[in-house]
Length: 314
Image 1 (tube, rainbow, N blue to C red):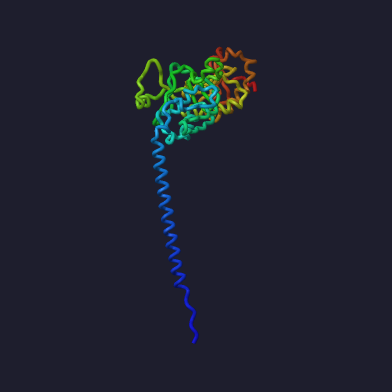
Image 2: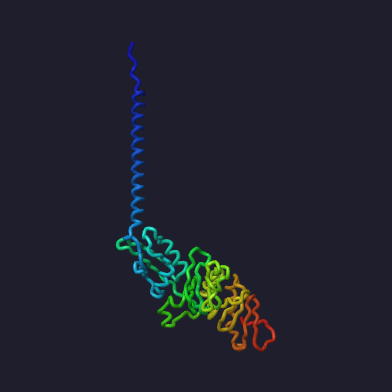
């Protein structure tokens, strides 16, 4: 009778258990090591944040680069940095967002330097394209936000293509040269609602008035300007003073459009089609042209008792 071969399964099972035990130990020590590393790194960050050497304590540790026209103090004011501020807690993305939302800049890059502590802000400016008059006005930026800012007071404000307003003293070179944008935006800045002024504890002041830019007007202006750029019509002023009517000032005189709407592009075309009107009507006799319906222009002249359809000069 021959002996049966020995069964290797028990030995394999023992080896497998030892292998699993080694893997569990390795996994445990790896996890423990990661925990210590993370705790150490967190402790280092906490220590770093608390170090006085890694804080910006005054405005001369903030450098703005790329602004050829906008005053540096205006940009620093809009950044609203509080001193001392830890470099580790400073949020570059937030600073860039604030500047792009409230200043005439197209691009912003914010960098931090630890040795020596410094913040550097690179900006690409956006040129102002219009101006708005507002007597002794102080602009409240984001009045419903947690940290509203104030700009001004000023009598003249410059507007970019996105509808952002900055006081004329933000542009010292333009103010000195008087090479200001020709396009006038009338009644673009709105009085701050009394309830918002009360919430912000702004007291009535006879020497200045609190104003803001409504999101509605800003949105209208952004869309409007894109269409004006593509039109041959020369517009010298846009007026929002009447709530139910937008008015343009052109070489033909005053153009009434009604509420801003999708018809604006067609209304610009209608103004261009009326460019020869001065050949049949003296421009000084024109009181206004009503283009609320661009397919049926109405001409009001000084000698006419009532508005009448304009001559078909197209």
